[in-house]
Amino acid sequence: MVTIETPRSPRSRKGAKWEKWGWLYMRASGVVLLVLIFGHLFINLFQNGIQAITFAFVAGKWADPFWKIWDGAMLWLALIHGTNGMRTIANDYTVRLGMRKFLNVTLWVVCFALIILGTLVITTFDPCSDPSVNQIADISIHCGK
Amino acid sequence: MAKLPAGTLYRGKVGMWSWVLHRITGVAIFFFLLVHTLDTALVRVSPEAYDAVINTYKTPIIGLGELGLVAAILFHGLNGIRVILIDFWRKGAKYQNVMFWIVVVLAALLFIGFAPRHLAHVFHWNV
Ligand code: HEM
Image 1 (tube, rainbow over the protein chains, first blue to last red):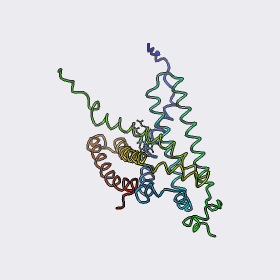
Image 2: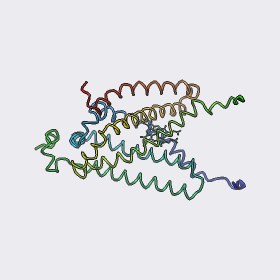
Image 3: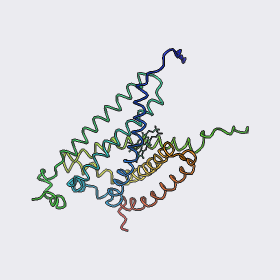
Image 4: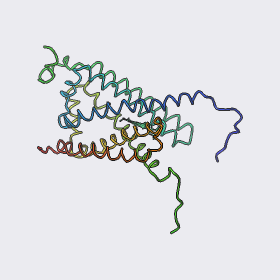
């Protein structure tokens, strides 16, 4: 049975305001993601090709701060965009409030964990400090020694 | 058989199907991104660990999966721009139907440009 509350008091505007920023974020991040992701696919998967994706390839790219910033922006924007999109979908299909809460919390915890992990990986990555890497010619040219 | 009602402007038409596709592709890309963040994080474990896992992306079956992933991203990304234009462009709603077909054609052209080269990589064709 669905019961409809008597509309005695209007809903608070707080949630609606937040929702508006989410709506705007989906569009703003979408435009930037289009450039970042299409560029990412063009360079890594089209030019370079899947067979040539190796540790050395990543290390070569991340020797340049430009690609660290590119990939870092992609990480943050895409995870938040995807998580917020999944939240919309979860809200559409859940009936029980408990289930909705559970899915929302799970989505944002996973999003937060992966953003922290990915950011740490990008910012602390230093191929030159790994001795085995000095044997890979196309990386060691970036290492200065 | 009884004649079906004409429906609405939205139901069963481009508006609805583009939304269904946008939603399905969004979910698919999201789950891939979760995995992709984790596999890339392996560069911080060791070169060997990263290469071992990334090698599974080079197998024929996963290679074909990547074709599907790229198709999903092409559609979702381009249709996302269409959604933004519908929302912000004065004539967006008027041209939403044409824009859908522009999205489909553009995505198809980019896919046709990408697929042969990717398949050549996956299956080691020397072209
Ligand atoms: C390539 C650039 C992208 C563009 C231009 C884009 C655009 C958009 C837009 C405008 C929306 C809002 C649709 C609406 O409110 O009706 C949206 C929804 C969504 N996006 Fe994206 N997006 C992109 C990439 C991604 C990525 C990388 C992911 C996954 C991590 C993703 C997952 C989703 C999801 C799950 C939704 C919710 C779909 C729904 O509510 O039906 N998108 N996208």
